[in-house]
Image: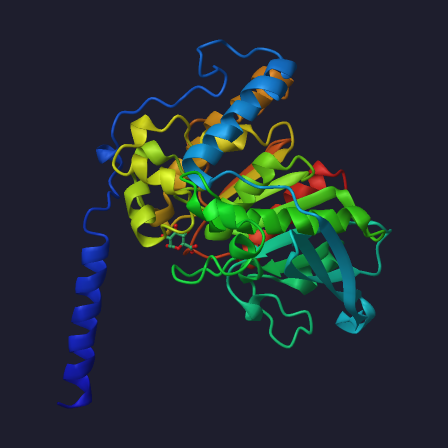
Length: 399
Ligand code: GCU
């Protein structure tokens, strides 16, 4: 057979496969089922939550516990030792930055885990500088501090130029993004008991745990201002960023870029990727209990707007892309919209969002909440970073 028929045959096979993978996927707004979201401001027992202390000491911990038990697994925080070693430090970006690699070593019961943090620290700003941490699931090319390889996914020159530390780690230091080998790092080394529990940690929790260890370093580094810290992730990394920021109150701003199902998108909408689809493709991301909600979203005691709510009163930013229907942009926006009520009702911070989604390429930045939907496909782009840093400048009063 010559080249052309082969190409056509392969193309047909590929589209047949794609059609099969997505055949049950709803992309039609009129097919979104009627649903009722659990109320972030009502306890499981039915009591209305009205004060900051009821929110802080009762409802927020209750919501985080429900996410641990049913979605991401019960995060472990205990370990015996943690140490930080600066492996290398040199001038970079023609003197505009210092490139530093830090090895974070954590031990528990005689077992050890190493996590490497890559940093580009701006030199021409008043120190300590605000920091952005990217949770990188796209391998070494997206975190090169030598800058031989540059990608828009981590535009370090631009971040430094805006006066922020650009920090990044590879999720695979914590847990491989792989069904067969994900247990080999954090889980087998430090928390093996998690692997037998129905609500045990899996990769999203392991990756979030890594982001928290990066924050442990920021707290100790004299040239980094941990009080002006931003955790950001794209897609599976965005799901992880939300889970990190919801739990760990040391982060000033949490940013989810196109995080979709199990991230910012409301599960009950069943638009784009569903709970059942994500659990069958990526069962090792979530805790085993999450499978109970396959095609049974209304039984979930939470929905993703409650993850947003747990970030309040710290800032949160959700971003979508118009062609990324698999991630359900409208569901991502609605989650922000519904979650943001906690800012107003509990903390007295008005968040003037409209129930209607903002137009494409028209970012909405309120004092504590940001959103944009840009044109184009599923990716983390220079445009996204520009909006995030504009929002951060405004939030930190750096304009
Ligand atoms: C897949 C997956 C999504 C995920 C995305 C990504 O498309 O179904 O849930 O967000 O990969 O991480 O890029």
